[in-house]
Image (cartoon, rainbow, N blue to C red; front, side, top):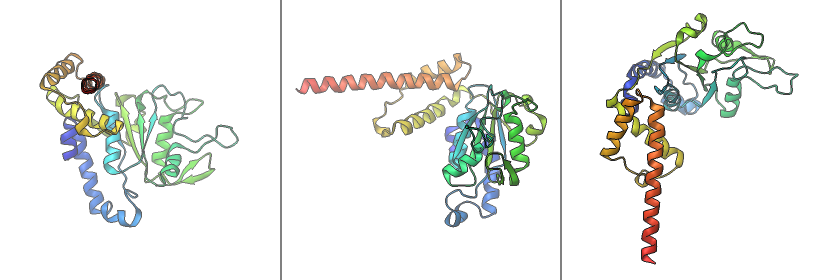
Length: 270
C-alpha cells in the first residue's frame, strides 16, 4: 500500500484490490515461504484485471509496476488496431513464421510458469469471428482453457493456469461480454493537481533507473518548476504523457546548463 500511496495515490482502488490478493497468497503460504523452495515469485499469480481509464491516466505504466511489485516477468502485447491474433497466439507449424504463443515464449525466456501478459489497448483489438482470428478471442481461450490450452506451434496442450493477464482499456464496453466477464474491472480515475508532486517523483525515479545515474547527480526540481508543472497539468486536462514529456525536456535543459557550467569552471582553472 505504501508503494501506491507514494507513486500512484490516485489509484488506491487498485492497491486495495491487489492487497486482498496479496493477503490471500500469504495465507496460502505463497510468496516468501514458497520462494525458498521454488525461487523468487515462481508461484505468484494474480487474477485477471482490466484497468480502465482515460488516455494518459497512467494505466500501462501502472500495469508494468504491478508486475514489478509482484516479481512477475512482464510482456507487453500491443492490441490496438490489430486485425488478427498474431501478437498473442501461436503460428502453426509448416509456416516459415511459426512460433509458440506469447505466454509460452515468455515462460521459456524467463524460465518460469507465471509471466504477466499486459494486453495494451485490448478494447481497440478486432472482435472475434474474423477470418484471421482476434486477440480478444485468443485471450478468452487462454483464460477459459488455462490448464490445457492447445498451442498450435507445439501441437500440444500447455498449462497457462499460472499466467497473469492484465488488460488495458479506455472503454470496457468495447470488449466481448464473455471476455469482460473474465476480468476484475478496476477504473483508474484521472489524477488531480495535488498528485503532481507524486507523479514527478515517479517520473524522476523511472528516468534515474533508465539512465543508471545516481540520484544525487540528478537535477533538482525547484518550487518554480513545480508551479509550472501544476499549471501545465491543469492546461493539459491532467495528462500524464504531457507531464512526462515536459519533465524530460526540463531535465535535458538543466543537464545541458550544468555541463556548460562545469566546462566553464574547467577552462577557468586552466
